Image 1 (spheres, rainbow, N blue to C red):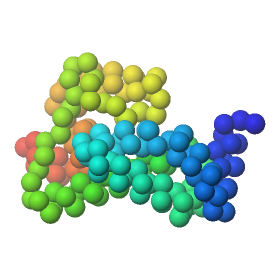
Image 2: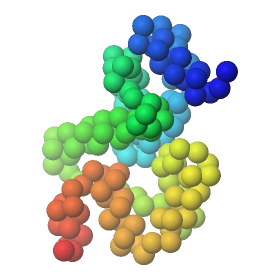
Image 3: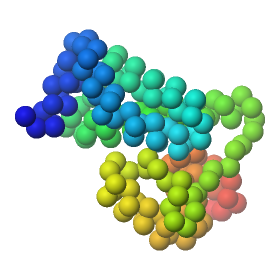
Length: 159
């Protein structure tokens, strides 16, 4: 039995309210979901809340996942990113305080959770580090901070 079939079977079971199947998917993917949420929010407690919400969404909407559109992990990380950015936007509006985002050091520290596996993470790290700092900052503001193009331009005072 392949891992892909196992995952699809687990999703089918989750759709039919099998808590054990959800637990298995949680064990398989929660670390990466947490890493991305933490990377965006920089707060352990808030990241843990996002992880709970992501898997609650999976429990409630397992039928909405379409394997033809991509891997389950990609879907989970997309949901994670969206929830974390929504949370962050609410907090910014609530506090009216902007927290600057750390881009990581020249060794790529602080980039955990960006990619799906260690090989992809290394490729992503190298690609980001090969960019001039101002280009890397644009990508990080748009992806991790959820800034629109206009907001990035305004924040960095560029066209």
